[in-house]
Image (tube, rainbow, N blue to C red; front, side, top):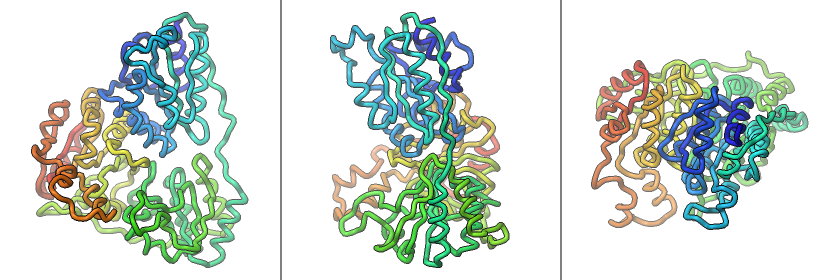
Length: 514
């Protein structure tokens, strides 16, 4: 058994049985080991950002890490943007990055780089295996790091000679001794704040946004009169009929400030203190009002459901305290396309137990109220803000949950970053319906141009914010990747396209021409 095979067998033995790959020469012995060893599913991505984003989506839905296979420093660098998003979402990933043979590095061949230096900003655990007999043990440590509390991104660098030289065998993954818990003192502090009667916001993210976590938050709100909201962006949120519907802190500073202005306390349940996405002249960075005190009840990796249950118990909050919620009526829209009737069409189309990957950015800001009345589903968002997130995450979610329909909502500018994800969806026959909002511009940047007070954009500025001359043809682009597509220009056409996408199996794409 060589080092590469010892690592693959250790990964499979440790419960890491999916590898999203984009290999090169230095990884060929690892590729050969993947071919020989049973139990590992290998999914090829044509760009490393697809590979790393897919690993993020896989973890968010499966709650167990996948591995990636990346080629040297440049391959890792190509995947860093979606590793940034994964890190912000606390996703566990095991990256395997090839390296030149140990004796070859000193010759400074063209692909030589500081791989550890590239890895560290987006990885909590980084190690280079020194020899073949260390590879399995290092792989087991990487798995343990990825599965830790909170989960981590672990990057193991594999020099080519450590992959082809003889190894000892597989290694056992250390048992995780940490069980997610919470601080009883922090729960008591939160209870004391909520009993005070002062205006209080219960701000949720992460593991608090499960169906049970939301139900417990509803009891607490019903008992105390506090308001419950989610962060602007969240790794995963249970939504739809029968689930407690909450609003999120708005992205736009001018919209967030009036909503938060009267709170005297914010109880943070895995959430961050409300902060503006960017700095703007003459606008605050912190969105909470002056004098508002934040109280952290749980952090990432804590048992937030358990903490909310303890908080409900301390307050005497029961299911009978929850008032009925009135949701927006949804029906298939008709007529010209507007943001409102696009939201209605999507809300009607979401099937039971769907997974929605949301990178609609400007087009999707109004999607939350109507989709609260859709069939029960999970909603995933971009935690790190690096665009090109949703098509790869849709790949990983579909691999993790092959029995669930995945709906990917993405703007045309964002989708161009990781267009290659469509090819992987076609090759793997993944059940993903991608909805591209083709407004022919970086609409988010046009708003930001105004938001930072940069003035009125002139011709050269406009050229940097628009996606025309030529227009992107998403139906043709999808066809070139092996995915059937159709363009829609009316609400009725959108209804029909969504119905077909949801009823069918395998990948499809809808270009919504705004």
